[in-house]
Image 1 (spheres, helix red, strand yellow):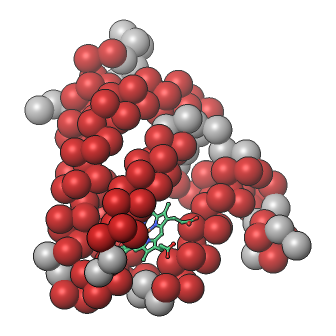
Image 2 (spheres, rainbow, N blue to C red; image 1 turned 180 degrees about the horizontal axis):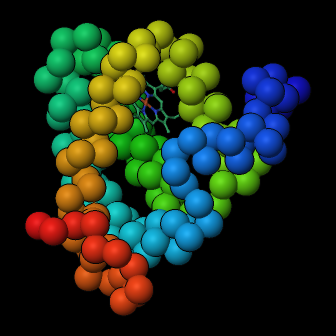
Length: 146
Ligand code: HEM
């Protein structure tokens, strides 16, 4: 059984989640415009992300194995590059559910996941929005004033 079936994430629910996030068709070209900028800095972003996690006692406990850590840097970079492909189809949601399942299996509490997501979004968005502002088409609003 697919994870989509197991968790009831049918097409209607997939659309509802995108709607809840405020993610519409008009955002997709903008996401894709950011992909190259992200990939160029993916190693730096990943290093910074895991430095933050290793500085926290609770999260560092899950990341003791240096081989695992190196593997996660690559998997996490692929995760965000996939987000910036801007293709939110069944395969995308299935993969995301699998990532959630892996974190549940290793016992990662949601508070650490959400905190980590918030930290990484904040630290990356400034850099990526600058890049987006430089390449946005003239009709797009300017979100980034820095
Ligand atoms: C922005 C938040 C996060 C993202 C995007 C992310 C991404 C990923 C991805 C893509 C995988 C691989 C899943 C797979 O094998 O299919 C993974 C696994 C894992 N992540 Fe995360 N992660 C995040 C937060 C965290 C945090 C906060 C911790 C620990 C404090 C953590 C620890 C782990 C561990 C231990 C694994 C399992 C590795 C294994 O045993 O195979 N992750 N993560």
